[in-house]
Image 1 (cartoon, rainbow, N blue to C red):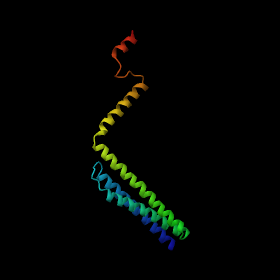
Image 2: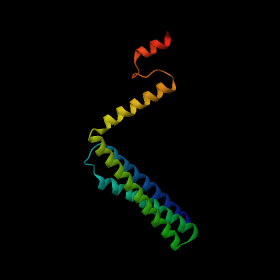
Image 3: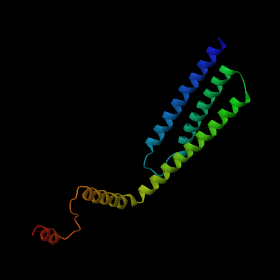
Image 4: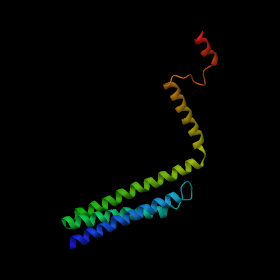
Amino acid sequence: MLQQIGNLLSLVFVVLAGVFFLMGIYAEYRSYGQLSTDNKTVGRYLFFGALSISLALFVFLTVETGFAWDNLAVAMILTIILTIVLRINVSIRRRTAIFLSKGKASSLTSAIRGAIIELINILTNKPSHDQNSDSGNENRK
């Protein structure tokens, strides 16, 4: 009976973590491309999601094997690792929004597009647009 209650509690924590992660993803999506994103709210949702996953793991391991300090340490380390990874994610998204707002993306995109077109021309043996049209006529003679 106690094992079933523990497994149910663990399942509740997993579902709660899913809800927190979805709310965090929605908050990020809602503020996508804006520099004044509400990073604290997004960070809180993602942190509580990571904490819920760790609690679910701790409860599950405690029910299955009994209380051990190792189980608590694993849950704490998992929380720390997930929090660090999620903070890196928020930082990368913010820096991307700043980069895109400065307008550097259009020149970068056109340079990448030009390089891809040139690579396709090389692979298909088509002459480049930079070549002189007279050189193509000389090869035909």
